Image (cartoon, rainbow, N blue to C red; front, side, top):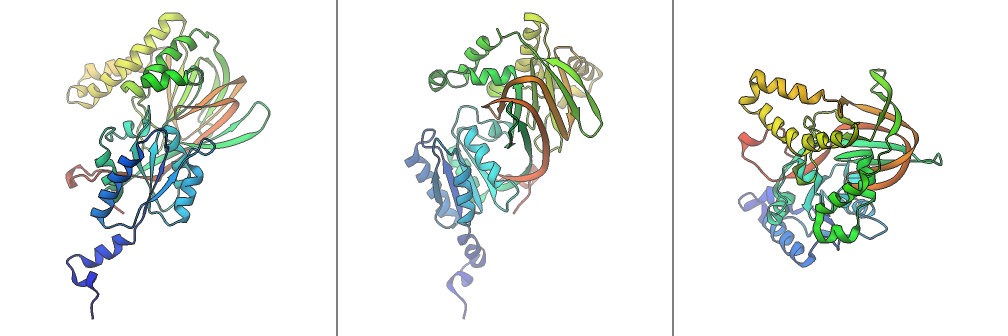
Length: 357
């Protein structure tokens, strides 16, 4: 005799989805919890999933411990509702597991969502994706750092890790201003940090014996993605699933060097990237413009799978927009396609690079 779920249309599928469970790790400062719970419950019920598990972050734990608890409870999808720090903490745990990471953008930067071109202001659409979306495998960065006292730590990252000016800028950002004006607070910090004209010396190795050298610079950034806040395009060729890092070394000479970098990041990179990928970009003129821009002296670009760097003296370090203190050396490597990110369902002809679970 058949069970009710087996005799109903699609009964077996319903039985299987009812056994699936999602979890939400949320930062209570970044979200409006009643609205979030109501929205998630609506799509959870429509999809026939089990009741969603909820885990609140704390000042001491931005989400890693909560994500582990979610996996131990059997969650198939773990959603991060908070800023970039919450997303990174959850991703570090979900990475390499059988679960998927979902995003409920709620912070200032939302860098991963921006780079994956996911909606930042559609809570309903992103909540629906938890239960009926597709999985897109992306690369995950791993970086081991050495502190000035010789101690070592390892972090995961999704977007970028950097030394120098960008890290000093983040460390100098005023929290009260960031709460009031969002990403514009970084401009205030940038103007204060850029007055620090001290560059730094470092030695590096890119991949095994592929390239090495000694350089003086003001900032070094290793990226899995290329876009920052305000649509600034720092790494125009970076792709989140191409299996390689994109690296930029900033070494401006004087004020006009910084002006050139600003023009490149806030305008030229985005325009040239669009131009190069459009039909016009296939012209000889487009290729010449892009090539010339890449060779300019204030910025130097490299690509590779492993990047090792050692400083002559300690400097500030940041990961995915969060300052992490001073380091003396780091080793960055990539784990290709090792993190599944839940994205909204798309039509079949739009689904290139999307993997269904």
